[in-house]
Image (cartoon, rainbow, N blue to C red; front, side, top):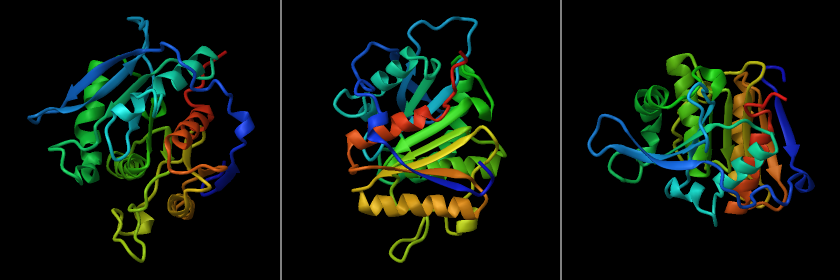
Length: 267
């Protein structure tokens, strides 16, 4: 895709297999505790079941919505272990390490997530790369999130890029909420639209999706894609037919995102 292009796609529900989130026993889930503050910042890490000591793995940072990272792990909600496990089993993606931090990160007060990019840059990524066998460099990192977490992903990735000169190869925002940019009603987290940009190079993927029935979020998602395009950042804007602001929609958008050459396993 050329720089500054936006590709709009309407997801074909028939292309999503019926067993995409079927039960399986993929991975080992362990608690995450990091940072120099008291109390420590918390979260969870999903590790491959049989990690080999000589192998390093790509890493996905996965942000929750207005709740907790346990939502992604819940079998009635995110089913993240099952989706990833089935895709690994079918050799669609390689094994990876999935980091699920609590984005309300200092004192459980509403609004802490606004500053999550500082946690990401100063604490979380350094901790993961020092303590887990992950591949380093932008080409081996991905970040994605749903709803509030989807908006935080776009804000944090843009900030990471502007401050570090580096970013993530894959960025996914599933039904991101609408407070990132200025509107007639709200003052956005990013005051000037020209400051909202992400790294674009051949081989990366910036994916923003929503459901066709999620009216307010659909408009926000489309605007984010439009502004990125104006700023020279290519992206994919995806619509899920009949999708709302619900877990079935989030799971399917996550599956589609992971299908876009995400750390593609060599055959």
